[in-house]
Length: 162
Image (cartoon, rainbow, N blue to C red; front, side, top):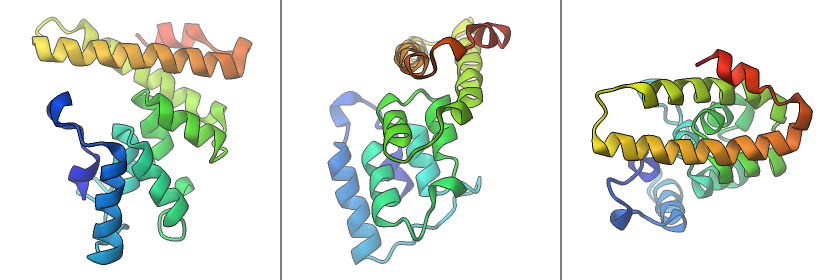
C-alpha cells in the first residue's frame, strides 16, 4: 500500500491520483487490506499520503474511512505543511478545518530544512532539480499561508531558522 503514495521515478510514469484511489479502494474494500497498518516508523498510510501530497488518497481515507483513521491522530497535516503540498494543505484547511496557526511551526521547520538541503555543495543534477521543485512549492504555500494569516506571518522566523 505504501507504493500507492510514493512518488514515481519520472513524470512519464506518474500514476494519476484518481487511479491511486481506485487501486487503494480495491485493496481495502475488495482484498481486505488493513488501512490502519503502520509502517516501520509508525506512520500510517494517511501520514505517508500527506508526505507525498496525495490529495485523492487523503480525501478517500478521511471521508470514506473516517471511523478507522482520524485526522487528529495522524501526522498528515504536519507532513503536508513541512513538504509544501499546496492542494492538500488547502483541502485540510478549507474542508477539514485544520487551524492554520497550528501548521505554521511545521511550515517554518520545512523552510529551514529545505534551505539547508539547497545549500549543500555536493548535490547532483537530479537533486538540484528536486530542490528547485521543492522551492517552487514552498513559494506557493508561503503566499497562500501569508494570504490567510496576513500580518501575523513571521518571515523573521523563517530567516532565523536558516
